[in-house]
Amino acid sequence: MTAKIIDGKAAAAEVRARVAGIAAEFARTTGRQPGLATVLVGEDPASAVYVRSKGKATSEAGMASFSHKLPDTTSETELLHLVDQLNRDDNVDGILVQLPLPPQIDASRVIAAIDPAKDVDGFHPMNAGRLATGLEALVPCTPYGCLYLLKQELGSIAGKEAVVIGRSNIVGKPMALLLIGESATVTVAHSRTRDLPDVVRRADIVVAAVGRPEMVKSDWIKPGATVIDVGINRVPTEDSKSRLVGDVDFAGASERAGAITPVPGGVGPMTIAMLLRNTVVAAHRRAGLSDPKGV
Ligand SMILES: NC(=O)C1=CN([C@@H]2O[C@H](COP(=O)(O)OP(=O)(O)OC[C@H]3O[C@@H](n4cnc5c(N)ncnc54)[C@H](OP(=O)(O)O)[C@@H]3O)[C@@H](O)[C@H]2O)C=CC1
Ligand SMILES: Nc1nc(=O)c2c([nH]1)NC[C@@H]1CN(c3ccc(C(=O)N[C@@H](CCC(=O)O)C(=O)O)cc3)C=[N+]21
Ligand SMILES: [Mg+2]
Image 1 (cartoon, protein in one colour):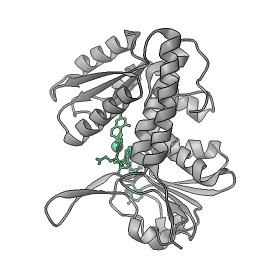
Image 2: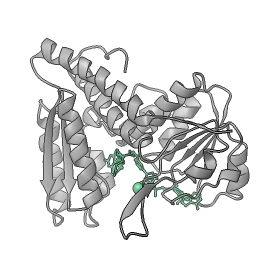
Image 3: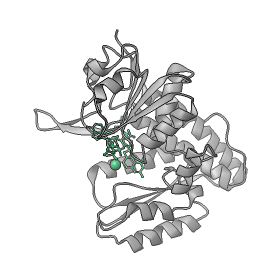
């Protein structure tokens, strides 16, 4: 079987176009654009690239983009001060503090300081708890983007065997909660899982969020399964450049899977689309408007 390649870039473009329409309508109604503030601490080149592409996508969707760059030496107190300013700024609907943060800063404290109503990453314990208990929440962008692709591909997920590899607070755990919410039968694997290949073999849906290049092998994949590869791993090439690969052996797995996301061009673009989506949703809720339809 040769898998269908799921086009995350195309799906993301559709979401972004719908978000742009909603943002324009919001601006007409309220007299201001929805606003997203990004905060980058330090000089990590990969983080700088992501933050720049987020800023560009924000402007293209007709939203205000406020980008803050702080030096590597920023103290936790200084960062908390900026978060506090952004919490109070009425033109800011969403706040994204790019992770990872330098070692002198406790990320969990910074996340907890963000106004949950502006927490468009969905990382605040309030939003995590609301998602876990089935209340209205801001949902982490990457797993939400994965769910979008799965629903587009499969329609209903109910009753399917889903295996999530990885249990981080930002990807694996919320992914598992979303799949439970769709009535999948969910297994969460991690570094202490015994016989990962056997666990993956029973999955109709595999979500790989590990951070290990091409760790998931093709003979683990049940023929016809839907494979969502969250991994973003930069690996060196022979010509001493580098390329991006996922957590799945794409070449092999695409011979067995029913459908699979590529890296790049799969989950990554959906993450940015869902960030914009969460920002317009946060703007509506903050303005006392009902949630926008169709995103
Ligand atoms: N496309 C996108 O938009 C995004 C992509 N990413 C990418 O997704 C990947 C995962 O990110 P993130 O969740 O933050 O990573 P973390 O490092 O926080 O978590 C990795 C998880 O994988 C598990 N793990 C590690 N080694 C193994 C192993 N050998 N077998 C099984 N499980 C293992 C860990 O288990 P344990 O808990 O036991 O340590 C942990 O739960 C990375 O490649 C990251 O770059 C992340 C965010 C957004
Ligand atoms: N507070 C916070 N929120 C995040 O959502 C967050 C974060 N911190 N820290 C880092 C991770 C990673 N992440 C990505 C987003 C887009 C792509 C993306 O668009 N990738 C392109 C390729 C980009 C390239 O070529 O480098 C693709 O997969 O096609 C990748 C990774 C968001 N993260
Ligand atoms: Mg991490």
